[in-house]
Length: 219
Length: 99
Image (tube, rainbow over all chains, first blue to last red; front, side, top):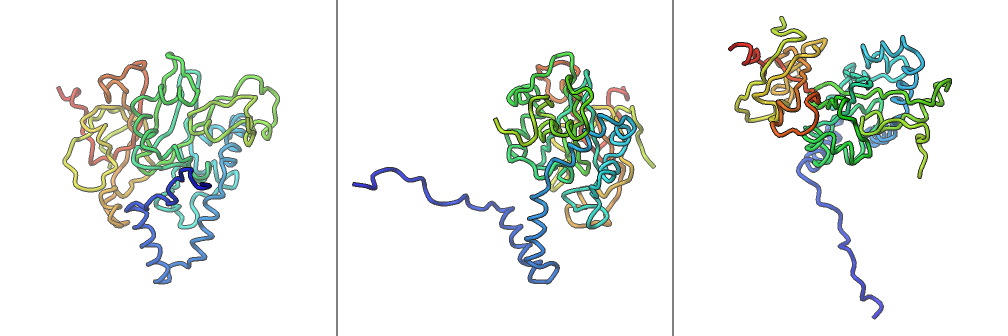
């Protein structure tokens, strides 16, 4: 017998109710001419191509330019615009699921910030791109507001007891990003060099930048 | 007119809800402190969820809760916090302050 090994069932997960609803509304919108199938494909292609590079540029610039840092902390939306990220497109208010109000929270020796959305998946897509799959998981969402230090430890991030862990639940309009602390050993680095150590997870707050951990670098 | 200001202690109402509110159950009945005001009044989720983009607009506040006030069995340092945004229709002056 050549075919005596087990096969995994060759089926994909069944779409859930919300996925079916999305498909129905999308197809209805296309049929009514609100947008074309090609518009939708191009939008998804664009949305899924946004990378966390924009957020990393904001962080790196804030590290070298104290005046820019003040503007980042005062108005994240305007500070993103300064580096060419227009969160207001295309409606002037972004889209309902990607609202334009960006608040950046600065990590300090006394406060470590981390973001979560207990409702579903609110995330600063304009500056960080699409959220990682775990960000939407029940596991992360339920536990981050309840046992944040344990969840952070699972990411390898141990926060000392004399540092406040401040969890930001993105339950309404605002989107959050973390401005991590600039690590020691980066004195004299250029903005470009600094941006290379600001990975996605450091701006979610589940990790901290390291001089030996570069964006795009694989172990 | 905003009913509250930064620094006010407020309690989240524990109202019965049928539909979409964005007021998470884990903060209902809990008391926290207002740490920021949002710049504009926004349409409340109860209306926006039905596509009523011209629905009721109310002030929205960022509120900081001590973990120990949300979860009585929280075992981390007493300084740990969670921040949530809550609309004014879900807030009342802190019950402890009224006593």
